[in-house]
Image: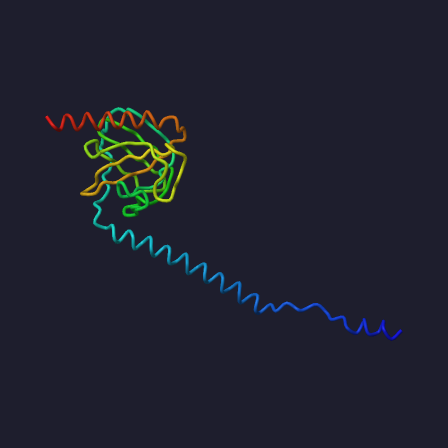
Amino acid sequence: MTPVILLAAEKESAEVTDWAARIGWVVGLGLFVALVYWLMREGWKWRGTLQSDLPELPGAPESPGAARLTMSGRYHGSTTAGQWLDRIVAHGLGTRSRVELTLTDAGLDVVRPGATDFFVPAGQLREARLDKGIAGKVLTEGGLLVVTWEHGDKLIDSGFRSDRAAEHNEWVETLNDMINKTETEGAR
């Protein structure tokens, strides 16, 4: 009987959880996440301050004319032309949103519910192309309509994705024809 008593004497109870230490770790992790979020927000605001030399965005004219093309989809952001990771955040251009695009003879009307709308006059349009990425958004090859336009002394690429991706080719052709026609008339 002695061995049975020794076995029972060697058993120990389960370790008790140290709740104070666990709560301390959870609070510390929460504070760390809040700090990282705050730093990201401050970085976004600082980028906007650095880009404050960008003029105000033009609004649509009273009567832009008949619509050549319309498209609904997503606005993925704007970058410095040719630098697909250099996001422009000034004047709300960095805010992703839904978009309604309307192309008229006067230019490109960009209506963004919940974000700043803007208008690109036809004389400021420079190029339209299909691409695969802009400012942290990468899609399949040709999945993004990128419109290059001039604002102030800066060339800007704005990325759009239609709800019906088959429309992209028609937009590229129509925009580039319109740009070439405007440049030809301006050269005369």
